[in-house]
Image 1 (spheres, rainbow, N blue to C red):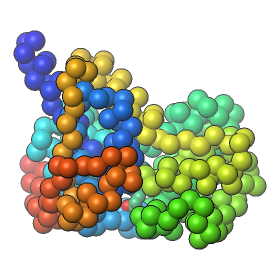
Image 2: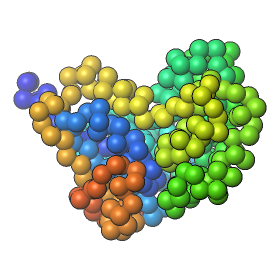
Image 3: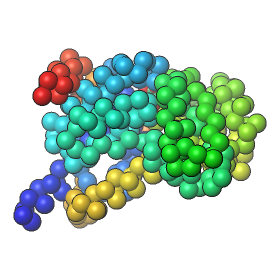
Length: 286
Ligand code: DGL
């Protein structure tokens, strides 16, 4: 029995995103859980998810989870806000492992910090259209006002690597943040994997009264709590390994990963989208 528990604890944590952005979530997870092994899948060949229909995002996300399930993960983290916002119930229904999204943990932490609110949320088109954050906050406290703004141009801006004080960045941000500046939210949820990389610029525009919330912190706490409660935490003396898979070339992924993860990644493998599609089909038919 003890050996069985040890084997379960030794299973990796699976993390996926539409591309590289989810590495900002992985970064925090690894800081929190340094003894854990991680498998990361970045669906860079099909990024962005945030401009696609909910049906397409669901299909892609199911394929991503089916691929990760080959590694028998003890938890799957949906690092992508868009996939968390539109696909979580389907992912949970199809996965043998616990599936943790980023929307609910972010909403819970936002409510904890904001008290009576109001809470602002910026995210991709699909995330904002889903109203997932508003619903998550309402489920906790229906009296809190939630102001949401879609900010689709920020993903390509971050991917392009523009510095935060670049005039284009500031001009685009100023435009998106105008309605939020008027409402002066107590908390602003950075509801997209890429936005924490613009936190300094967003903070400058919103002012010190608005607390910027990067969901990664809350997600790491939820995952840690889940593992601890089930005795699935890996011993800290084990140095956690990281294996990455990308649907775009491994070279491009490795080249850009540093900016999101904070360090180089050396174990990156290419996985074709046709292989993901196969994994998805197997999962649906099983
Ligand atoms: N990872 C996505 C998210 O957090 C942003 C990039 C995309 O649109 O796919 O919503």
